[in-house]
Each structure stands twice: as C-alpha cells, then as structure tokens.
Image 1 (tube, rainbow, N blue to C red):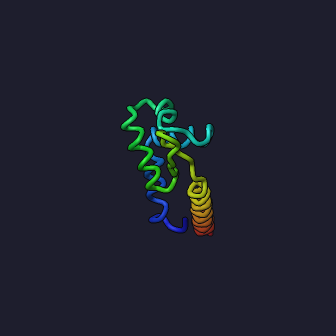
Image 2 (image 1 turned 180 degrees about the vertical axis):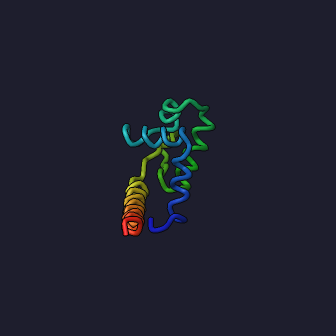
Image 3 (image 1 turned 90 degrees about the vertical axis):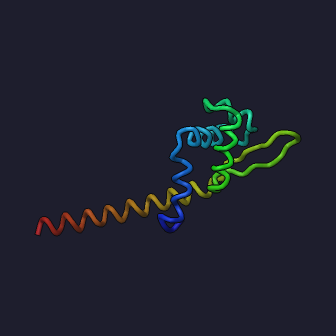
Length: 106
C-alpha cells in the first residue's frame, strides 16, 4: 500500500464497527461460516453478508464454499500493508514536526 488512494478502500471497510468486529472475529477464530460470523455482530444474516462482501471487495476476506456453507477467511496481507503505510505516514509526520520545531527554535 503505497498511497492514500490505495489505502482508502481498506480504511473505509474497517471504519464500520460491525465490519471491524467481523475482522477481529476472523482474526481470533480463523475461517468461519456466515452463520458463525453473524453471531459476532448484532445485525441480521443479510446485513452480515453485505458487510462480508464489502470486506471481500476491499481484499480483507475471501470466501469459499464448503457444502451449503460459505466460509470466510481473513487475508492478512492488506492489514500488513496498511500497517506499513501507517508507519510510513507516522515517520513523515514526525519528520515534519521535527522540521517545524527546528524552524521555531531558530
């Protein structure tokens, strides 16, 4: 994730409390069916499915079929990339603050 534009869909997806709960649940419990995920959020099965599909569009989860069930699996690479992006952003802000401090002190 090298730009704010590339990071936007991921952060948008994680900005919803229910989607964040789903990501946390998948992180803690591993691959889960739609029914299992629905129990971790206080929304209907249809709403949970929409949240999962949005997370899938953002690259955070993938789904597969196991019989009649749809199994959702967390994809960690986008989260690692987001962490790297935030670390770089923080480094840039720290550098900017250091330049401002040096300017003010001179």
